[in-house]
Length: 162
Image 1: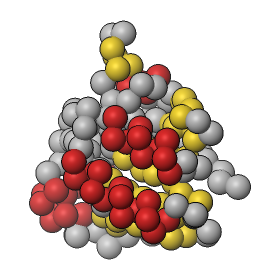
Image 2: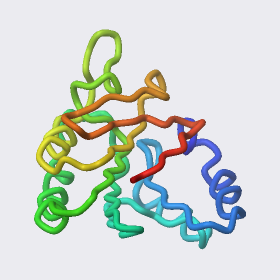
Image 3: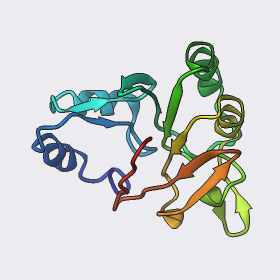
Image 4: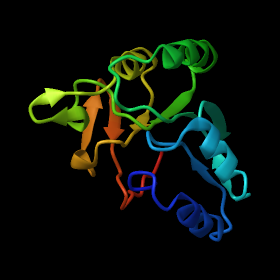
């Protein structure tokens, strides 16, 4: 939600003033410790990093940070737990970085996304995956199997789950 880490408090204040619960994961410019500390000042902004939110028949899985590595051992560990608990549920996966080998991770004719995210999507088959990170691919969409993968970017997107 920031541009290179600038303006985090300002943005959180604006979101907090909407008086709606806003679930947020950090990007690669916010350290886990700093993000937890800053977001705690805004009661309507919920740190959704490495957490599960159940709402309206869906299970939302949040995993923020990173974005530059093709593999993520910590995500693999968490995703095994998520798979064992939620494999039969309607899942929406929210990550900062994109999965590998999609239009969302393509930079200068090279795929730079995360293979662990992709493998999880292939195995779990979530209804939707929302990611970000690569500013060059804002607004793009792709599919992994039947899973729609989107990068809403800073302008956002309206998504209706059915």
